[in-house]
Image 1: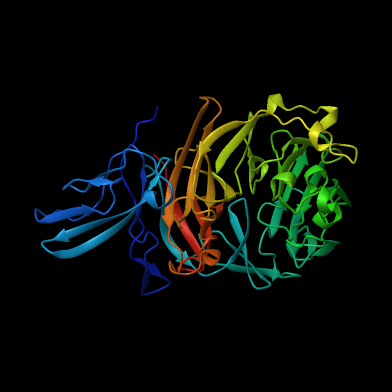
Image 2 (image 1 turned 45 degrees about the vertical axis):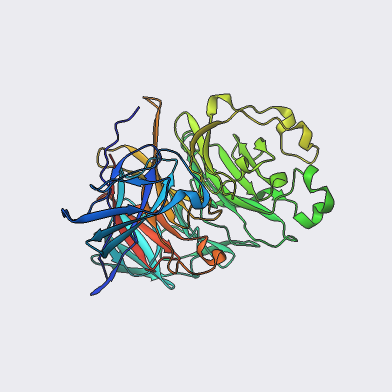
Length: 474
């Protein structure tokens, strides 16, 4: 049991590259069911507080409470503050089933819409069109590095590995030893999404393994996972380690077609073991998570057949592998203990495997965050050196509201302790826009600099650019 400190921190009246202002919070408060919370407001003996919901109560000191968790419209409430008969302010409340108002991601500064690429030894590399720049002081100044051979992909753009830099863009991968001269490596059929590019450096062999996964929404497309092996002399060998059948190839047999995938969501390398993890989607029949403990020479199915195996992010601690849910269904964070992984022969990913032969591993639910699809993650540290995973979540699914959020996840293997907290909640640019436009509203943590600041990109927010933030973790 953790002691909860109710200290709501919101983002208000922030400068946008000059004199303009922006309000990310939009007077929104996520209210943890069963927890009291005092709304920060100017004190006045004449203030009158009114709730429009029977599920959210408010007293005349501005303390709000939701005794029970609710979903849908029942989770929403407006709290109005009056001075005499004049409406002073309206707060938009969402009842949630997770911890909120204890920690926060505070906005420090707003920056132009740079393309963030990598952080290497305290130097952040970013691009403006094809021009590559570097900064060592939080974008207070910059230096020109080179012209890139291609416009960086929307994501994932670049890896900084011990064997040089890998750049993705326009269905091609490039390599450079020094960020000046670039060599094209391979042509791919589709660009990957956020977590489709990863690597592992094996100290025992001196080789670096690079993995790249394709993503598209065309049913006739096959999707592949590529592997590059770079040795100590920078010689490279690239091949395909996974080739998923298209949905059209399976036709009406999709439910039994284990080799099929609509597209590949994520490739994640466990830096503790070198194991490679792959997540594909989207329908139950082709949602699966696979892993390889031999650098991609063979793969085994961890589990498949439901939305719990549909993920956009996989991350690792010393003892566990975690993933989130990219789903309209009630979303969860899940994990598996790595010591329980089975490489049972019937789960080997091959043309002979049958759907009813697959043995799903036992998994543990870490947190239930029922509102919208969960997207990418970014590993950072708080001021005391704890490892925190920041996860962006969009309102796709809209179980409670249309707010985008960032969650923080702390896992202490030593204490066997997990904390999941909401850090910030964000309204879409146009709250009256159609659901299809607003369902991807996000603040997306990208990287952290050596001073502890976290840089985020935006999607469907009032401000389009890079948001410099500071993590305040209680």
